Length: 61
Image 1 (cartoon, rainbow, N blue to C red):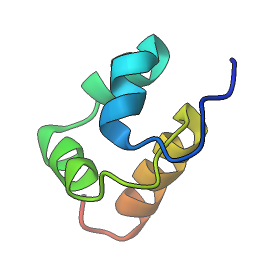
Image 2: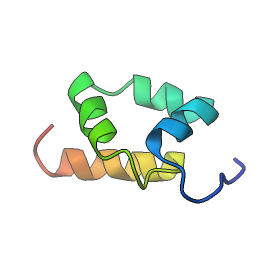
Image 3: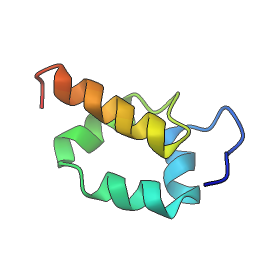
Image 4: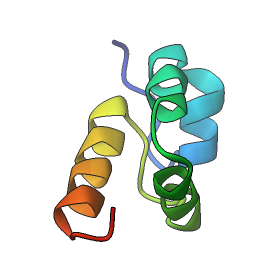
């Protein structure tokens, strides 16, 4: 996958990367909401997956 410019937020990533969008859509609604609240700093699919892992690891979801 090509790298996107730095400074992308989750919204940009979901708009520009189909794999990230599809992955995001598989997440539970409460996880999606939590990710949207932390919109910044997620610019790649790998960062999105890592953030989901941290959320799940926190015991909140």
